[in-house]
Length: 255
Image (cartoon, rainbow, N blue to C red; front, side, top):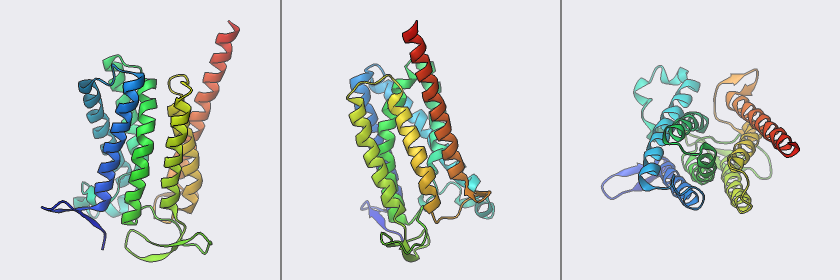
């Protein structure tokens, strides 16, 4: 049986409670950063409008991505597509649609997208760390069965316990460490967009590697998890952006 969180009048799946907590905590961190670096974007009405748009777009993208990758399951259970309490929110889908929504909102409001993305990167680290705790509580996104010395007796999404690679713990540690690293980097006041690129590149590369240790079923392409392919593409995109920014900086200095 999956754990639940008692709200006195009704029970909420712990997975859902932690996902919501992660989203709220991430928004608080994002708002706090904007208060120090982009005060106009931190005006309550502007921030809340943007947050609602990005969260709505992210939720739609997260669910659509998950359902698309598991269509063989959902095609026979269409009533479960909107039941996020059963698990099934894909971060990559949320990231893509949320990023597009953020870029649109920044353009409409006349805000600096790169600075908003930096703030969002810090919030995402916090939100993902807590969200992976939710996955751990639910048995979602579990690791492969392993005889490694670091393997732990952990459940899968069906509650079956076996010695597994502690993937959820590694993911929690990844985003906690990444958050600390970004806070330190922010102290040096790098150009706008640097924190976001650091978050995107490091998280994508790390999750591409950790993807080989995931035991949950998903779409495979030539033996690779589809998520790994997406993460590899993300890493390449970030690498290209960093190279282009570096070349542009050298050109500006030369001029």
